Image 1: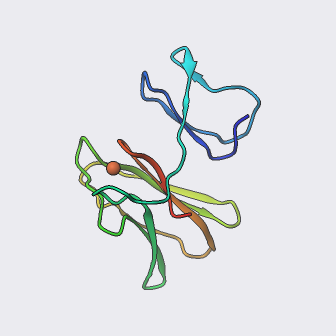
Image 2 (image 1 turned 30 degrees about the vertical axis):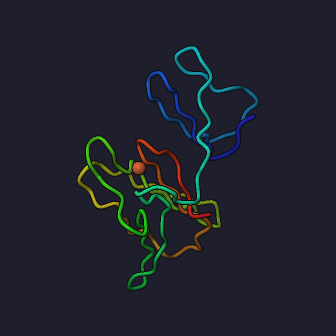
Length: 126
Ligand SMILES: [Fe+2]
C-alpha cells in the first residue's frame, strides 16, 4: 500500500511519480515494480543535499544545502518543495543553471521541506 506524497522511480525509463491518493496496488512501470525513493535526512558525502529552511526579510527561503548543491546539466536539483502543517504543498521545479534556492510564501507554518536531486534522490530536513 502506498502513502501520500511517497516518490517512486522507474529504473528503466526514469519516470518519477508522487502518490497523490493512496491505494492498495503496487506501482508498475515498463513492466516492473517502481522503486520506492526513501527520503534521506543526513548529508555524508562532499555534496550537501539536506534542504535548509531560513527566514530572510520575512520570507521563507529554502536552499540546498548548507553549501549550495551543483546545478550542472548532468547533476542538479530537479525541484524544491515545502509541505505546510495544513497539508498545503508548494513545489518549484528547477533547471540546470538555476540557483538551488527558492523563496516561498511565509503565510503558513512549515512542516517539512524536501528536494529531489537527479542523481542522489529525495532529501528532507526532517
Ligand atoms: Fe546530488
